[in-house]
Image (tube, rainbow, N blue to C red):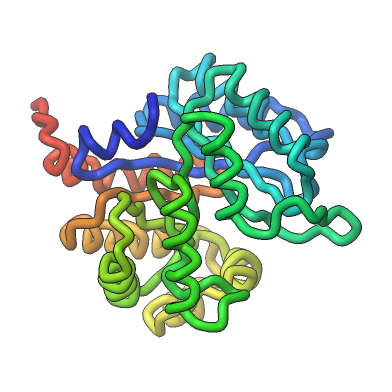
Length: 294
């Protein structure tokens, strides 16, 4: 199913993002994760792409497992800056051949010695995919602005180009301040961007995440999260519970504010996905008109 159809059928689309094992790693762990995620019944699962190009990526392999073995719709990430047009076409053809109907078009991280000249921006990749296929194309958006943009206004202008070239929905980069995100949505809509946007939420449940992923993305940490880290960083169990609670509170507030969906960056942690889903399922079901059973 195309994800664009999900947004027409539901008030709140709910999805997870996972990453494939490295090319030489055991694939068994991802089966365990997916088995647990299947019981949670997300609307779809997105699968990230390796930074080094298609030769190092297991995205297609995992997307096929998600779709065929677990009957969950996959959103396969596809990057371009380290690939030629021919390599992107091959990767896209491979995804379509296994029944993938949705891709997330990304520029990708620059890899020294691998950058090609065929694509510079995700908008160019979007245009290429749209000329090649009628597959659904998702795009990324950045509530605090792309790290390489001069300012957020310029970033939104670039995003408008991407949408005009064929993006059917957007997934946001992680963020932790809902007020900032809702102001960003207002700016995006004023710019004439009317495709559905899912809020990207990452539960901070490990101390390493504060100095790793958060630092890499440049996401602003509200004082509330800083206090949480300072209080519980030396107690993994307490930090896990605090992180789940913060993410739950964030999601409830966003859904109450009318966002069109939640995209949960779970870092392959099915326990976190399960706990948060248990917390918010009655709210998601209410929004989507699903009757509760006693």
